[in-house]
Structures are given as structure tokens and as C-alpha cells.
Length: 108
Image 1 (cartoon, rainbow, N blue to C red):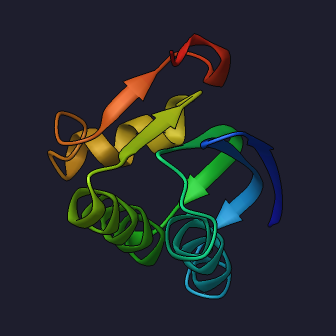
Image 2 (image 1 turned 180 degrees about the vertical axis):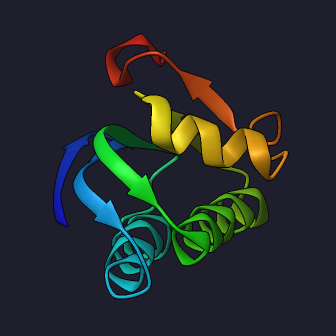
């Protein structure tokens, strides 16, 4: 898994490519938490357009990111959900819990 973070003022886009699994999800979690805690971002968008597999630990990392955002009153948006991540979020009934966007650029 590769992560590229683009900071735009108080908003950041976390571009993720590859699989989010037991071994890579801690890296995603740390990237998101750093943006909230150390960079004081008001909006974090996780772009999953290039992610084709997410396991339960990946979902847990996304939920933890959402919880952290809520604690500090920030937005946490999932963008670019292709078939695999969308399917996992639908199966776990979490799709309606997250704010989503077709593309990161669509988030105001």
C-alpha cells in the first residue's frame, strides 16, 4: 500500500493505493491521526479510488479515523469508493455512517 498526502490549508487528501489489510492498515491509521492531531486539519478526505481490497482491520482504521474526526469536530470523508471498498462498507452497514464523495475534488 502507498499513501500520498496532499495538504491544502485546513484540508488534506490522503490518496491510498494498494490493499488495506492487517499489515498496512496501521500505516493508514497513523497518517490520518497525524493530520488531525499534529496538523490541525478540519477536513480529511481518504481517496480510495486505487484501493481494490479492504479487510476488517482496514475498516477498523477507517472507523477510528471517523471517531477521531468527530472528537475534534472535523470532517472525515471517503472518496472514490470503487467496487471492493464499497461492497465491504455495505456488508458491514457502515456506508451510511461515513460521508462519501465520488471524487476527492467533489468535497467542498
